[in-house]
Length: 603
Image: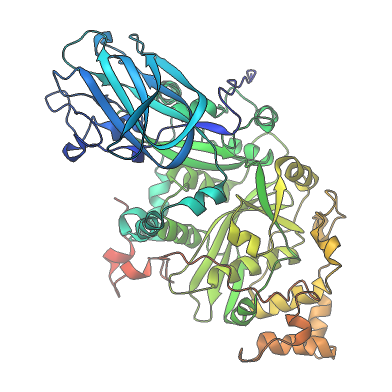
């Protein structure tokens, strides 16, 4: 029997969240004197295991033995942020170690100067203490000064720390990021240790199939530990598949300021039920006390999402010329696309538990007791030599395809954009009027994606989630597919019509799914077999299938006359990648004829 679902009241402003990030401070001997006053270095701990970084990721910080007064930790938030609350947790066993008198200070840099913003007293019973900053204060550099503990002459011991910080728009965050940080992130994404580029399809699949999720007492214990230690979770609604109903969770979540919940349940049927309610179930992982990586399911529901209407995809001149070099398929190489995503991006949110669920659903589909049409899918882009160069992973709920992630092969500039455009065109042929791209991102806007707020997205989603849809198609050449989409799209309507979001209940397209006009197969066949095309169609076909050096006919290149006529520059992001070759191993790690490089077992 399901229990009633009660959300913890949102403790702060709706545009804020509790955060704790190990990047805010440093551990190790080199950090002492700059980032922290002291760190324990005896039989109970050392500077690498009990420093500020460990405190910020759910562990603890302990001062050096005998230093129990005038201790401090410095925090660098990375950018100027609006802080409205600081929380600390005392030692849960020895009350005397717990910090008593504390000052939260704002600084001008790593070494100060420091000015006290708020003073507060810590608890001595292992509980959390909160100090509000009224009004909130903006700053990048902060220091927690501990004047004294609760009486012990040995240590000061902090067992938890978090800040409530004003939430910023993702585009604003990206614009303010340090260019060196972006460069380092790109290097990390390309490194074998993060991207696991030495894995093969078989090795990754075997590794994923051996995963087991938390159950019973261990799950209950881990939930209590995470809820207590990771304060960020206290603002994010928790859901348990045994106790809560996904529909009830969605109703409560709809009016909640959070954009992400959390769960320890990687149950395939529950995954489908969350998707049926509009969530995109992703995942994260955190360290537990026994140094294991704990997988956490994170149902995401952005307050605004990007959607792409399949007849309105923007196709640049570059894509039109490149399309003739590729062909696209659906559901023919799921493992290879999965590996390509890991090779390019690292695990990111696509952690082992998430992959285990997706593979399970790929084989078995939804097996629950509700009337839900759910299926996992992949799109694959192939070059003329038969190499997989790009792909997309996602799923369908009724008549809606949700794109989760994708990849492109290193050295194939523009292949990612071609793949997305051809995916949109193929979805159109299969009767889909629109599909979901999830989180707002600039490159999606360049492809013609529209922004829908949560309520408007749900209205459209409810109209298609119970519709049966056809999701199969033969391999098709890119130039031919774009030609058919262009013919179906026809002239553009007036600008004011294009900018208006279509009615949430469009008339059904082929196979019962919402869709725009799709060219009949018989018509395509007749044209291919000799039916005389119009003058404009002849120009279109020559442009797509010619040698690629000619300019677009004026009637195609003019963006005001055709949906498909945009001459925008290449919109695909330049990201490093390493993707599987035809044999299934990542090319830069696949030595010729070397089985050890092609099929290593994951470490």
